Length: 301
Image (cartoon, rainbow, N blue to C red; front, side, top):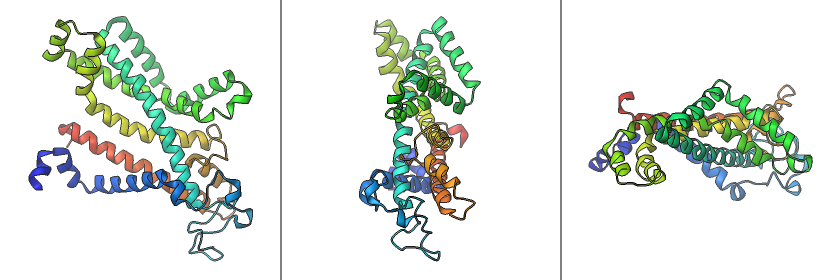
């Protein structure tokens, strides 16, 4: 077993990294709970007939007046907090992963092309990236969301809020992928195998995606992990500001925004439990991202 782990250095480092193991367990539990939310949750927070207003504002099970059926209490609408959090994590992960996929495809494609062709195309892409880097990601997402609201008809805005939010987050995160892919492509362009492929007359698209891309996946995987946490935080921030998802779509940011309204009145659990889940998810993903960075860059160990 030890010989097997040493053969695969990443597994060996993972087994000997308590922080990475704990982070992986926490992330796996939260993601598994979100994936199986329809089977684990007591109620469906999207179904108004599954909960009652008479059960509203019940405290957690250890406080007086609690209902043992609702371990973490209920919100003002009578929705079970555990159920709302599981569905909220599910929606936040869906938006985060979708935004990450769009950002990765756009950023890696532009970065590969900029590194391969260079010249004016490279200059244009990098100047756009520099301008966007000068703005915080939240401002970029707000700008794109505002433009989409101005373009889309009012009748379609409600139905397309998830799609608009996903695209806004994606367009605020593509820069890291583009810069990393471009820098790695410049390095690979000097390698003999790439020069040989070009000399053989292979198409640029084949050289970029068949020969170069597989050899630059290491740093891109690190960016994916870190940016997933950023995408989840961006969604939570936008929803907290009331710009993201509506109150009837309980993402983590929406739950935190609703909980803020009851913090001073004593119903602290409506705010704190979604916040703790969000912190646990983001911190665990960031720890795994740091671990992957150490695996792919031995100089940082």
